[in-house]
Length: 92
Image (cartoon, rainbow, N blue to C red; front, side, top):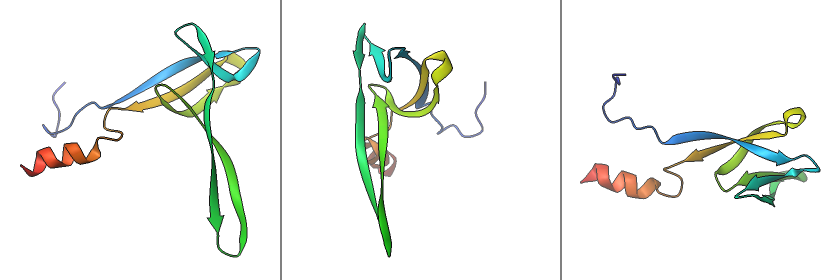
C-alpha cells in the first residue's frame, strides 16, 4: 500500500488479551495470571476529586473490554516514552 505521507510509520498495535474467567481483572501473559493497574486522582476546582482506575497490561493500557468473551483490548504504541528521541531525529 502506498502511503500519502512517506514519513508515516506504523507504530501502534492492538492486542486481544485473554482474561482470567475466575477474576476478569486479571489477564494471562506467558501462562501466568497478572493484574496491572494504577489509581489516578483528578483534582477539580470547586468539586470533589475524581478517582478512577487505569488498567493496563505488558502491551499497554486497556482500551475496551468484552467481559462475556473474557477479552480485553490493549494498545501498544512503539513511540510511547520515546517521543523526544523521534523528534530529535527529525531535527537533525
